[in-house]
Amino acid sequence: MRGLNLDQLRTFLEVVERGSFSAAARRLNLTQPAVSLQIRELERRFKVRLIERLGKQAHATAPGRVLVEAAQRIFHECDLVDATMRRFCEGWIGRVRVGTTLSSMIYRLPPILNRVRLDHPGIDLVVTNAPTPNSVENIVQNRVDLALVNLPVEEKRLKITPLCPEQLVAIFPIGTRGVPDEITPDYVARQALLVEHPSSAAHPLVLGWLSAAQEPSSRAPMPLGTIEALKSAVASNLGMAIVPEVAVAMHMSDFIVRPLQPPLPRTLALIEHRNKPNDPALTIVRNALLTLQTVGTIQPRAAKRRQTKRARGAGASA
Figure 1 (tube, rainbow, N blue to C red):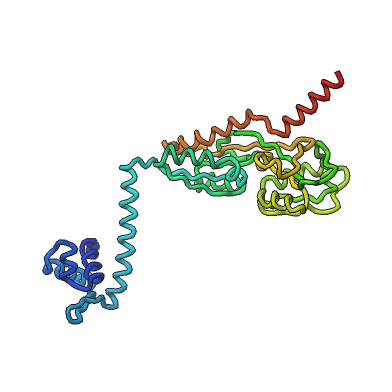
Figure 2: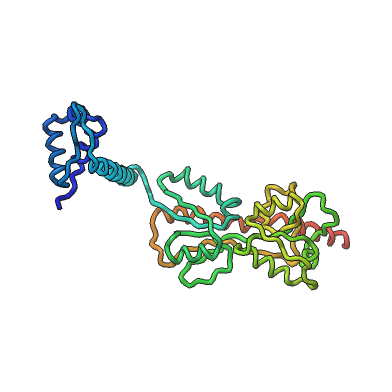
């Protein structure tokens, strides 16, 4: 079968849309015989009648109406191809797919992504939220290019770059009485504890820390979906929670925030496939994410408070 002629398809759509061979000819800057010839060629190719005349009006037949829908889809795809190719001439650099933990997406990435958008508008950024195990699998299967995850991650096919430490802290409703300066597993075992969903990286971390309590908790922790859900539940006086300090750094006055003893740290890391081919867009986004390493030099507020308090105590004893 001969290749489909897009000019004939476009002429056919014009005739149907305008209901007239002469009107289509004027729109396409063609003669009416030229328009009639293109329609005949199209009908000869498909061996069906596509246009019927009712007086001076031209209408699509039943096969013609089907062809109209198909032709519209074809030209839509053609427009997408044109737009894609045009981006290469207008400074398009590439597409980068980034996976991230939800906490990083909410509390760490917005200024970085905004800066990439402003400085490099030719980069298409596709950002998806996924738990660490899913992001590891997505990198291995080449469904994403870069991912922010919580360590530990054991996968030989990945290049793993630690970025910054994150301290987990305990938060309580404002007005809670008798909250100690440091929160131990034994103290938490006596409280109503709210935790992230079991699929989160923090869930086993928190439960592992809590297992050090001498007396097991009399009630199971209440799992909620996200850190923001935990914060809302704590603010509603439903219990306490253990969350990354970065999640409450801007909202310290909304909660009673205490450090954990023993401390419960975790490390945010950047992962990518060891065999991933490099390109300019990937390099730009990777370097932007690597700026998170500077956060590691910033001492968490809860740790600062601990050290200040100990220093005061040492000064007093001296």
